[in-house]
Image (cartoon, rainbow, N blue to C red; front, side, top):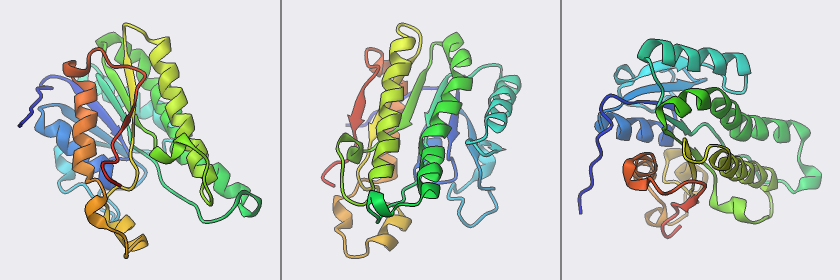
Amino acid sequence: MSVSFDFDGEVALVTGVGGALGSSVADAFLEAGATVCGADVVEPDSDDFQLDDPDRIHFHQGDFTDEGDVAETVAAVVEEHGRLDYLLNIAGTWRGGDPIHETDADTFDFLFGVNLKTMFLASKHALPHIRDTEGAVVSVSARSSLEGGEGDGIYRATKAGVRILTETIAEENLGTVRANSVMPSVIDTPMNRDMMPDADFDAWVDPEEIAAVMLFLCSDAAGVTSGAAVPVYGEA
C-alpha cells in the first residue's frame, strides 16, 4: 500500500541533517512538499555529509551542544520562513565498549552532549514557535534505552533521557504540540556495516523506513499520538 503526505507550506528543522538518518528524514520531508531547514556541525562539502543534494535544503551550520548556536539557528529559520512546524531531533552518535568502571568521564560528557543536550536545547528554543503552529517534535531514542546492558551504559542512559524528555514535552504541551520518539536498534548505515561486517544486514532497518515513520508522526494521521516511544527496529 502506497502512502503519501502533503506538508506544503510547512517548515521542518532537522538536526544532524548530514548523517545517514538525518539526510533520509530531510529527503522524506522534501518529497512531502515541506520547506526543510537542516542543521549540522559538519559542513556540506565534508566527506562525512551524506545528504545527496544539500542545495535542496536551507542549511545552517552550528554546534547544537552550544545554546548560542541553537538560539541563533532557530531564530534564523523563523525569520527566513515566518514559521516553524516540525522539529526532528536526529543529532546523535554511539560510543561504547567499556564497562562503567573503565569509562572516561570525557565519554560521559561527550555522549550526554551530543545525544541529549542537543535534543534539549533544540526543543527548548523551537517549542515556542511550534506551539504557534500546533506542530510536532520527533526525537530519536533507542531500543537499548529500555534496559541496561554491558559496555554501552552511557549511550543507553542518554537515549533513555531522550525518551523521558519527549514524554515531558508531550505532557507540558497537551493539546498544542505533539511530541514522540522513535526507537531504532541497528540502522543499516555504511558506518554500522564497517563496524559489524559479519552481521546480518538484511535484518537491519533502512534509514528511509525510519524517516517514513517520523513523517507519519508529524502528520495529521498521527493526530491522537503524543508521548509515544515507537519501535522502529524491524527484525534487528
